[in-house]
Amino acid sequence: MSALAADSIPLPSLRPMREADLPEVMAIEQRAYAFPWTQGVFRDCLLANHPAWVLVQDGEILGYGVISVAAGEAHVLNVCTAPEVQGRGHGRRLLRAILQLARGRGAQRVFLEVRPSNKPAIALYHDEGFNEIGRRPRYYPAKDGREDALVMALELLADED
Image (cartoon, rainbow, N blue to C red; front, side, top):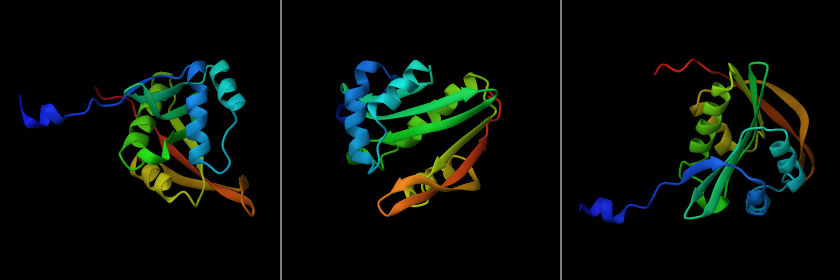
């Protein structure tokens, strides 16, 4: 056996989010954001059948993504990785997974909002092909009032495989 195989750590796996995941998801949400979603918002997304996935390694949730899909369009509602594992490609993997789900449900275009202050997320979205198409003034709560949202969009191309 090669040294690489002996030292390899199993890759995180993706699976649909379940209601039983919400306490762990909420713990990440509260560590990651100054203005987190509530458990009720996540529960409503699950009840609305929005595709919601978690990234799991060794039984621990590392991150999650939620997207809505309707009428040929999708909207990324939340993509988050635990702060202690950010910068390792987990957010990219989650984003790509939920974009595949959107494509599978017939979405041709995907939208999202992101805080202008969230430079790592903006860089990821640009890197994955999103373009800024506008701003929503005073969209997000912020420490000193409100923060705008950048609106970004991606055209989904048909799979070529």
